[in-house]
Image 1 (tube, rainbow, N blue to C red):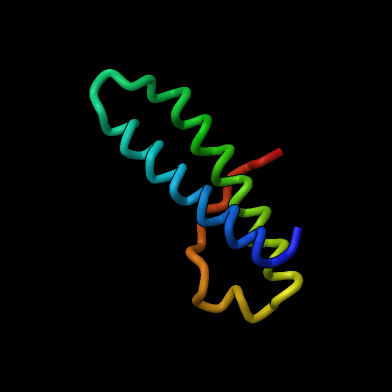
Image 2: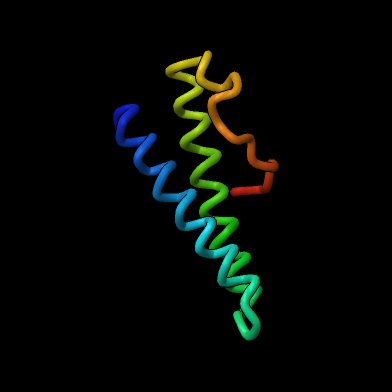
Length: 73
């Protein structure tokens, strides 16, 4: 996966994350399943950010939103 592919995937994941957060705010949404989906998205984003920062060490400085660490194992 090249840098452009990673950045495109990050963009898609952020859009997915925002949609999930909106659904979670709605009444009647099943919060537990949405939270699980959010964790999957968060883990994939963290992996992509880690891969980019290994290839481009400067990219971690101020260009990306830092997400809270969660267990992705």
